[in-house]
Image (cartoon, rainbow, N blue to C red):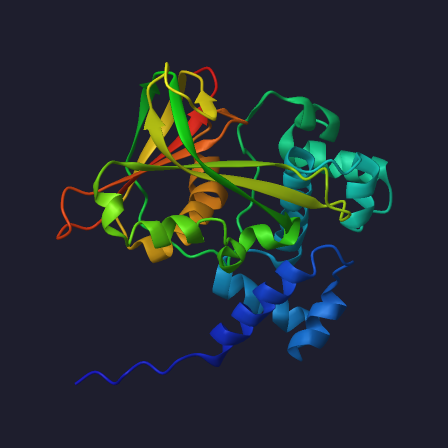
Amino acid sequence: MQSEQKPDFHDDLIKELLYWIEVNLSDRLTMEKASKKTGYSPWYLQRLFKSKTGYALGKYIRDRRLTMAAIALRLTNMPILDISLYYSYDSQQTFTRSFKKNFAETPGMYRRNASWTMNGITAPLTVDEFPQPKYEIVDLPEMAFEGETVIHSYPIEALFNSKNHVHRAGLLRYLETPESLLAPVWGLSDCRPDTQDEVANALQMEYTVAHQVGLSDNHSILVPASRYLKINYPYDLGRLNDFILYLYSVFLPTLGLEFIMQPDLEKYSRESALNGVTCEYYIPLGQL
């Protein structure tokens, strides 16, 4: 009879360390600080972190800082100098050298690109894992929608914590009502720099719960004909935020596709009250 495997308390320590890194990426993280946080010597901590995660601790911290800087370039209006200082680089020149080494282009070029490949993005090890999703590339025609829009502002640090993503709350409540059986419900999510918030590193999530209408009908949103990456979401809707976080931080950077800054589309439908809700997730693509 096999004995039960005892939990390794080092797993909890590394998990706690990973969360500590995420909330302190804008600070000057050092091995000494990480050592003090865990109570282990820098030498032992680096060996332990490598054995548990497969990453060198110092490189993981550097890559996560660069990833957050890249996201800040794309999704906020922070000047490049402010981004470099916010993520504790000694100078904009030092930041530019490190950024170009990782992303193969300067921060200015990265910000100006019309599309986003996400190459070089390092996902936080705190993100929930999912089986690799099946996907297909589809073309959708021009579509018109009528619905209600809510706008939420998030500091960039909240991006990788799905519990902070409250913009879908209204949609999930609506999907529990009998009215949601009548026709497919769409969610349109658009992430952009927040020009109203006093916090420089804030981003804005504009989320619309809508029904599709005819192009000749009254409508509040018109989505142009585009090519999309289509992914079927087969899990409980309570995990949808975690799944989307996994898509953007883990899965999409592996595809080498060019994504454009246009709303993601979510299509929710079900055939009867006895059947669960199905979700099709569409991410807009650039030229293939």
